[in-house]
Image 1 (cartoon, rainbow, N blue to C red):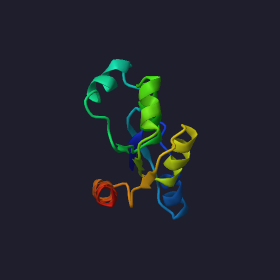
Image 2: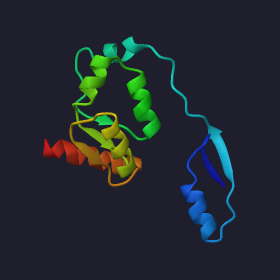
Image 3: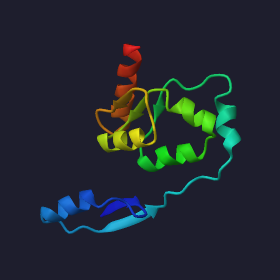
Image 4: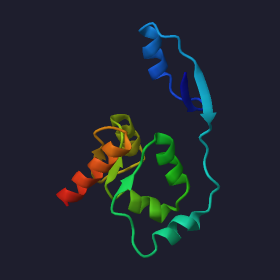
Length: 123
């Protein structure tokens, strides 16, 4: 049984099935854009703009740009991003990101945390 979001990717299930496993999916959540209020992000970053953005899904990355105004979006494109896959790097570049991109060693909390620490130590 693979627990996933609605319309999640099939890659893991397909690989397991190719190895002889019986695979079933249980969709337990739905990805959707939160209610849109452009002022929220601006209020959160009014005093200090982030120095690193950590994004863990393509949907989240695209949602972020739906939830900020054009000025904030441009500022976000100019700071480093920490992503969890090369596939996400492709999406970031399509969104116009033009600063450094760090790919976490793995998508686990520990992998992301280690990548943040390594990034911070290199600054």
